[in-house]
Length: 219
Image 1 (cartoon, helix red, strand yellow):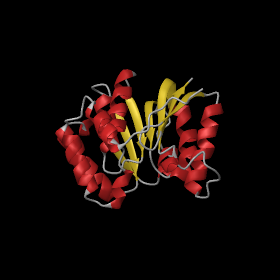
Image 2: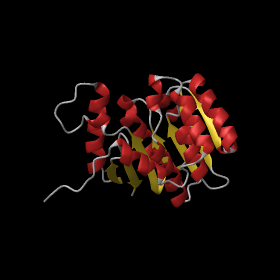
Image 3: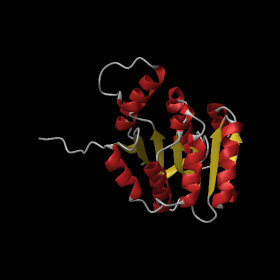
């Protein structure tokens, strides 16, 4: 049976990105432009369709509480915050004050700053210090790949039933499935992909958005 998928090229990708509800959003576009001015590090920013997907999912499950590990300049957090309920709350965890200062600027421009609490510091240590009662409807993970499994195990007990967890960069630049991976980050992602697929605590699907999103629903 022939495999059913379409290979994207630049023309088709631009078409896909243009077919989004927020395709002409000036704040998102300004944030992308600001981030791209940082140079090669701008590759850490999620893609446009990924951002739209985060907004849609958070809104679809009526998320009131969310957590993000790895905020960078704030594109993903802005999109998540827009999808939260009016009194929703998003906790953002990141180590860089320089990058998150950019995020703060655009959160304010988008009018979502009141929904977001930024916690600066190492991700694992910060997750371990989360208040005991905190529970989340939605989680987005996009930080140190070698720590992804740690984030997963620390956050899963705090995710409500039918809540969602999303992991970015789960195709590791398209290098998975083609032989042995030598880089620690790639090995960690490959191991977690396999773990998630067989973990009875969650239902999962690996989606080929940008560099891959592994979407998990807590059973």
